[in-house]
Length: 564
Ligand SMILES: Cc1cc2nc3c(=O)[nH]c(=O)nc-3n(C[C@H](O)[C@H](O)[C@H](O)COP(=O)(O)OP(=O)(O)OC[C@H]3O[C@@H](n4cnc5c(N)ncnc54)[C@H](O)[C@@H]3O)c2cc1C
Image (cartoon, rainbow, N blue to C red; front, top):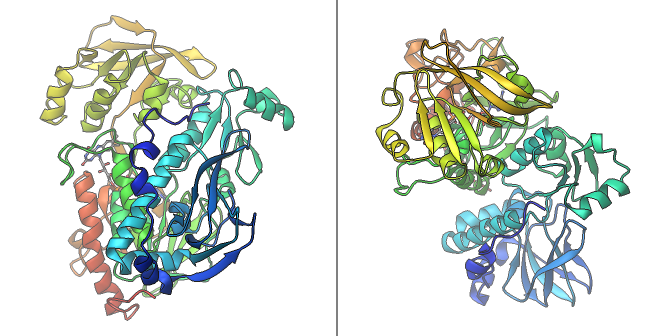
């Protein structure tokens, strides 16, 4: 099984912060946010796979909390008494529970629903911090063991297994994997559900539902990550893209009382979520992984009541009236619609593909556009090839060098200095297992059954072709704007497809406003923006003032609304 608890589990190292006990005076302060409920012996307070009532503070009696192993057996997490609370990030977002909680004796508890919990976290700063920290650490603990999430049955190298694992990992959702070649439980499940080996992978959701090689959206729906959108609701702001720019807008608009929906077709974090280590973001002198930085922003946005629709892909945008003054409608790939008074385009950019024959045949299993611990583990001890000379390629090379036997770094230019930051160039120079090949061109991929066996490249004008037995190819060769979905929307783009804003479209436009009033663009997708995390976050914050100006001028919403 893939997801076993590490030797030094967070439960051992951070237990007091994960499971704090509230003082009687603190409980009195939070009583106004909840309702008191009694539970009889053996009654469930939470069930895995079901949306529970919210955060539960035990007032009297004891509660047993357990998690499921891959065979469905319950393993104890702990027994908690008065002052303890049951809940983690699922309770903040109103999503299905990842643990079971039962009353072995009569229990009286204070139940705080997700919206009241968010109000508590904001109103009670210190106590809120204690509760929020405990909820985040509990989720980290569940991610360590994979408990409470779906079980994927399939081989680690299988392209669809990688796709599903990558999706769950990037969305911070626990999961477990069973390998039919090594795990007996995998074969028990295959027999129980009469699965032909050719139909793998299968996914067993906590609700008991079985999915056969599902799409990310099917899986997300099954585990309650994403639900239907209320077609009658009109949001103050709809944000397309949950990268750093979109999440920053979400945090700053929601914290000022505007209603916000953020949509993303993949996962929160955008490109930044794929960065192995961000070292140039203000305030993190030792660097931080992109995933950790983005998970903080995502949780922060949820704390302020931002609604998330992930994964949901936006495929069209239209204004409902000729004057552009009324509301906007976003069309989603699943035929749902979102209405909003303003729209922020934060759909960023996507990786570029290499022009080489057969690339698509190997993309599921052997060609990677991210270098995260998942890929690191997959390539552990092997030789890999990495194409690209920019900072993202440099970071990936440094990270992979710590995981693999050798990194062949293939760049088109004559050196690294002209395209990569000095600190990365120096670091790469100090790595004995990274070999730089300049003026390189990949001109052949060999292999079978979707698995790469060898890569061929040429250096400079030499006709000599190098052939290496390499099973994993990493591509970091730049990005193109995600603006296809804007076709027909009337939003003006520059010749490369980036969104034009402000004075670039008309003299009367607000900063970051597009050619259509009420539609704004920020971050990497915006023409002329600085393609960096800090710049994206800055634009996400800056656009909020502009949004207020727009909404107030058109009398669409109060300048600063108060939360209920
Ligand atoms: C591997 C890597 C490492 C990097 N390292 C650094 C670094 O160390 N420091 C630094 O400053 N910068 C770094 N960058 C650049 C940085 O990540 C980007 O500048 C930043 O993420 C841009 O943020 P954004 O929110 O504008 O767009 P993105 O991060 O691109 O996010 C856009 C989001 O929109 C979503 N989306 C797109 N189209 C749709 C649609 N139609 N419907 C719904 N959702 C949609 C995407 O799924 C994505 O999540 C790195 C980039 C990469 C790829």
